[in-house]
Image (cartoon, rainbow, N blue to C red; front, side, top):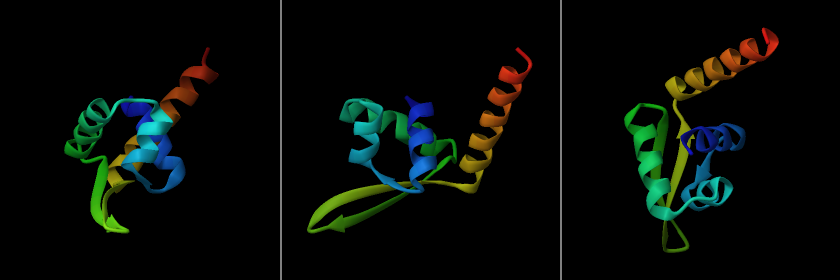
Amino acid sequence: VRLAARAYISGAGEANFTKIKKAVDNSDGNMSVHLRKLEEAGYLNVTKRFNARKPQTIYTLTDTGRKAWVQYLEQMRALIMNS
């Protein structure tokens, strides 16, 4: 779930909670826990704002999160190339 969320946010640049949850196909509670863990790890920035009087939570990758994501992709690429 965390991998899928990071992949989605990386591609989108920024995404709100609802879009991430739908893309990953997860429940509110479960998605919330996973996103919080990514935030605690320093991988996500979280911005809370209102959109038409409705609260909205926006997620972006931090520099640390982006570096970790790129490193992960490079490791997967190396594993595939060496197979």
